Length: 385
Image (cartoon, rainbow, N blue to C red; front, side, top):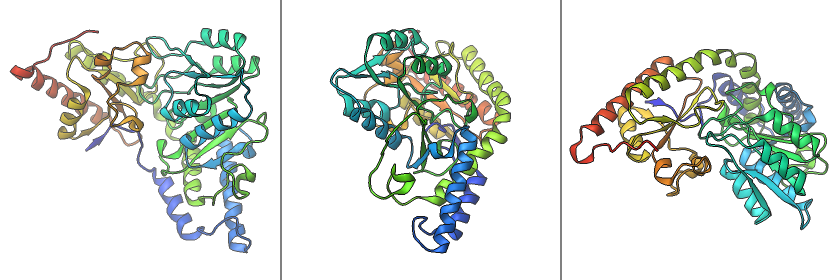
């Protein structure tokens, strides 16, 4: 099978596997316990924190280790709620991950103002500035890169606006990290990420706090993470996450240009050979690994089943929305009708993907297209919307 669903999760990097297994064998003790072997694990934990801080270009004390971006997003909205009054609101992009949207709804209910995006999925900085001037805003939530379309947000402009108005910004960087350099991430007040999206293990991630954030607690209990997140530290998983992030920034991302060329060749070929096919968000800056393909006809679930039989694993969009009968909220926010959104498949490559696999995937899509077209009673009715 060829795996093209890396935005949902990706395989472990060898360096992450080595770190994980080594720590499980040799540094499994609880770092909060009082004896010498635990003190050694605690020292290793803090060394890992320093390594992550180096990759993210921040102070080590700004890093909170947790279970991943979903936990981080929930914690930030819960924190923002405690500091808000009846006149406060939060500004949330319509194309955020479900963990942001649902957290915002749970904490702020009707006090959410949705930030619109254009037809390419790019958030409106003009609307953001207008609302920051007119409203009493507790928090802004805009992701760095979209998990469904790969659209990269104008992070420098967003950061500049939030700083100028003194408003805290939550930036979900889950899809950015591993595809673009972590050192180029914005200096957001809250930055979240999940290790399994960039070659680390599942169930571990981080929340980076800026020094401007005061008293913050994401989970009360013990004094782990300086009292900001209780719970026994999962050092083996943390070590694997920090090692792979450091490795990526020093090595793997140097190959991005060639990988962009593979994706572009794939897109150009299909646009020429399949009438009515559309690349969603094609005019926006996108991650090198992500293609949101709007098929000429047939629901995306049919395409997925056919591609699976041909040996290719792709998705319809966010794995967190699998099973939902609703069309993608991301594509709906971009103005696509429900029927059109349901014809979109998401293709996301990863560090193991080869140029040959991109070519083979294009072959398979063309084969399926011709099969559908030749199926008399189930032929394509091409819709260009």
